[in-house]
Image (tube, rainbow, N blue to C red; front, side):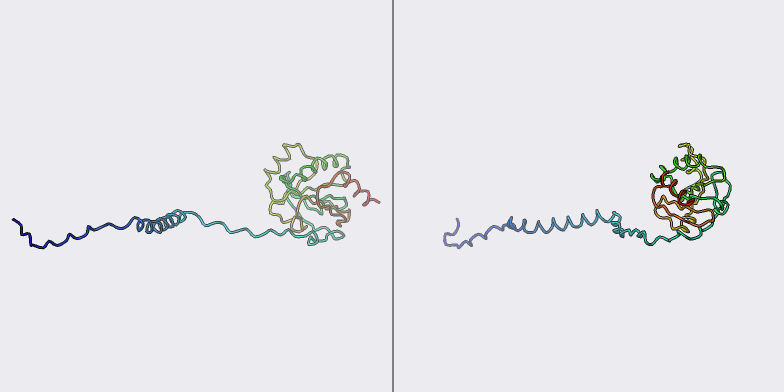
Length: 205
């Protein structure tokens, strides 16, 4: 029999786990850390963002070389006929020296006007020299053949060498050169048949 006088120690209180609030308190920082690591890993394989391009400044018209009244810079260039011609070959004739490219809308509109203009000129009369800039023989030849444009010399300036000498920017540009080889007028922008007629009248007047 058990001793009724034996003292029994009170039972120790049961051990409890951490309070739920503590889990929540620790969970949010852990989730934030995981998200930060995930974003870092995801971005590590991406190329860096390209730098913001610098603004483009277009030179004002006043910076163009003032060629009117000056002798036209001479040059030689290949033609679509696969020969070479020089500007000085046309000394003694009025020359409409035009700079153009196939991608230029106003340039394309000028070409039929040049063809019609040349059809009305005598063999040794005024001439249009159309200098294509920055394109190849095949590009220019295909473009003109498709539109059935012919009847005036087309020269090639694939490396912008002639255009640079004349300060060509933008296109189209037409320089009207008199019989003595002097630039008398400069037409920046599309030239029309009426413009060409007026220039001829002023030169002959």
